[in-house]
Length: 162
Image (cartoon, rainbow, N blue to C red; front, side, top):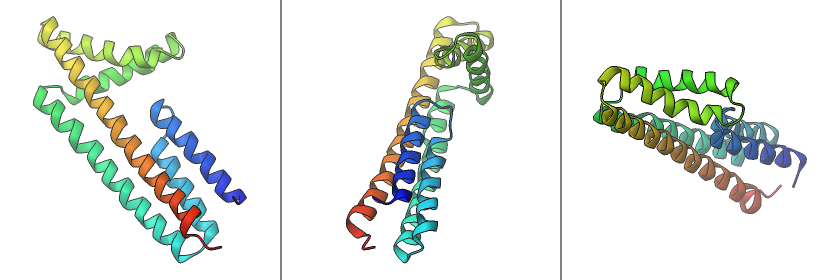
């Protein structure tokens, strides 16, 4: 492996970690790694792979936008409720290091839903729908990331003749 391929692979690993622990823009790091590799590679194969990567990124982003959002709207979860969950997650990330982010999101959603509906069952249902949507989002992003990484790996291992 060349040094640029090692750097790209390391960026991709950090990108996958950024998807699982949403601190870094994981998928963008992976796309950036392919972009960096293509810029150094300066070949038709590199530009084709970059084009495929951008298309995969756009498809994954559209799926992230439409699939979970549609399900949450059908379940009656408001966008403002999700934003409150994000704010609570960020706040608790400072109060409870490491796990505060993961605790704050569902707690924030539950409390806002409870304030809106005054029904614990309905608030819990909204929280479950929101958590499923976040899980679906992460799954879509991971599948997109691994597809891009697989395309890059196949390219450098089997198609790149340099």
